[in-house]
Length: 172
Image (tube, rainbow, N blue to C red; front, side):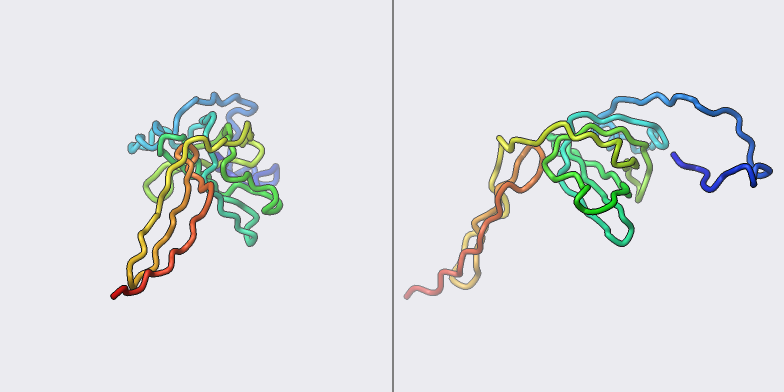
């Protein structure tokens, strides 16, 4: 993880290089393992996740970065924060299957990942083969209902959005 910034030969009196060009080993982990690590043993470690799904992204044009939420298909999620991109067009689409090399950071008492966009490799797209209906509500005589949303149970993305059902009104 970046610990020193703007370091060059003009300010060498403030630091000493002990070694350079070292290889840092990457640990293959799961999102469940990272979430279970409440003692933060993975903090500042380099990790690799394979075959996880992008279930959400949030792009900030002000800062030129994107936050992703990754899903392992078993309900476990983790966030990757501050990934630099040139524009929203470079964001990885929700439902993409990705492999990620990242560093583990801790934010608000939870592990999260920090990486660059070139360390997230898209390997495919979820086929949304397993879905379920969520958020459905029956209309009553005074309240509107909702047909429900179709959500992929693997990647956690919505496949189709429902529609409002008008209130049924009173029948005498």
